[in-house]
Amino acid sequence: MFLLPIGIVYSSSSNRSKIDFLYKFLKDSNGSVIPSEKFEDFLFYLFLVPSIASLRSIKKLVVSFPKDFSQLNLDNEEYYKKIDAFTIKDINHLIEVFIKDFFGDSTKLLKSQFELKFTQENSFGWIFCCSGIRQLLEINNVPNDDVV
Image (cartoon, rainbow, N blue to C red):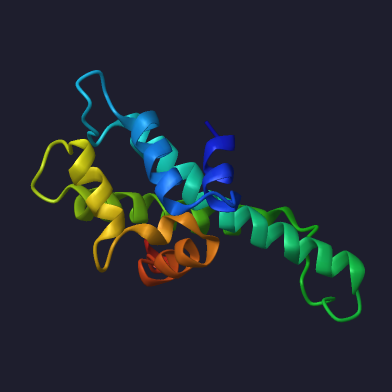
């Protein structure tokens, strides 16, 4: 499951192809997409991809330019625990928001309805790129005080 979101974000395929692939992956035996654990798991890994890429990039910068990034203590286990907690809480919140907005009052979406969610104005096409995911994670950020 984890490799699928990486392919969705980094694939050079058209968004149309990605939409078709997602529909085939997420549809149930009746040809409907429903708010399911499978859908939520997919979204979790999809929203996690940009965070992993960013953290890996930061780590590479620290190794390559230790003087410039000496204030970042990336060897500190507490640092990773905080990043994990903040990332996970924001991702879980965005999943809730996404499912609510994506399905609205519907309990299921047929293929044409599913496709429209990605092609109409103000669509959900942002899920196909890291910058779109990062932007929505930032917009839907949960204050740090809410981390349990």
